[in-house]
Image (cartoon, rainbow, N blue to C red):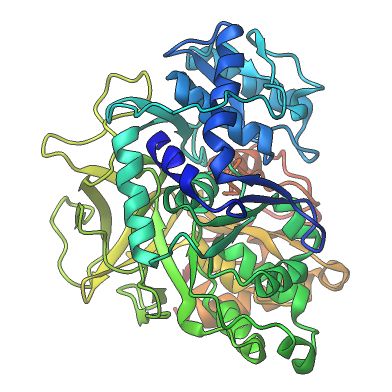
Length: 540
């Protein structure tokens, strides 16, 4: 990676990293041609603080120029950043302190980077100050790391257990960055926008490092900037002539909600015809919402073909498969009878196969667990002796899907599977259906199977709370029509806010939520019934 940073020293003065606090305001700017001297200056400071090759540093990855330079500086030394979520306003200080302590203890960290977000926490190991802004070594030339050298550690989502440390080696990082940049075909004179968090693989690798690898402008903001001004972000993309971005499905749902009242003539003032690629990953795609958003944005010139559903995981650095630029959305009916969206063919560097519950290799249109080999797959989890792969080199991902026409379709996680009369359905099928009802808060529902029943947990508006029997009946009827399963009204529960715990990457902590439900710890309006009935396919 460092050799690419060094190569960018030849970039024009105006090319580099633009950091936005608000999309309509002047950004902070760091020229790529200054990166080598700044990285070397920060590395010199860290060496003075006792950091050496191999030192593990808990790294709360905030979106700031100082933290970005600090990340590359640790790489220059050969130290190992353990990339974690910073402390944010919505995080309970006690739980974050426990998380920080556990990361430092379990992964042998010697230092923790003292970013501003840690001001109210107690460092579990000696603190490492941020380098002074602007410190540099004139004429510095960054080293070229060996391919097997550890670049950084990222963490699994932690949706079912404490996150696992995933070592990212230099050669695997280069390989996956090449897959990303050759797929979207970006060049150094183009511009990319991202507001994804840098502690998440999509934000760090897909958003930031892919731009550094090519040397194209990166217009970077924090997630909160998008949350406060989704419309402003699309206006920014139009104004700055961005050619691409990488986002989760949530961004489409949220943008639709924030912009659906805009008039066509207002939208016509946005010229988004220059956008070429929008990677859509990290979570299941809500196809009805995506279609509605595409139609809403038609006056802007946004080509429907720019949306590229993709599939990936931290264990391979990021990308496994994606639809091609301009190919658009491909939808088929899956083996379970529900609609599924293609995430494209696997990158040719990977070997991919699927196995069913009995271990048999799957054929076309057969549901099975996705297994991967080769490519940029990591060798194993950090400090764990057990192998990541089986004897034949394949890694069982825990993701269920099928292949159709040479392309992958992801239907859900094994842990999210809901079986009804032998048919495999997935929690996301129920959640997306429920959230299409106007009184259910978007992104605030969860479905699970426990004790032989399907439960639906949701945050709802006042309309539903004022008529609990009627709104429950609407949910039951809607699920029967869309998913083909009848859920008992008494298993539909309305929660008080903030009961659905999430990981640092935004995924539901399903096991923890189910455990809280079973223990009676969830707070809501409807926990007064425990019906002794089983769910069934609709119509039985």
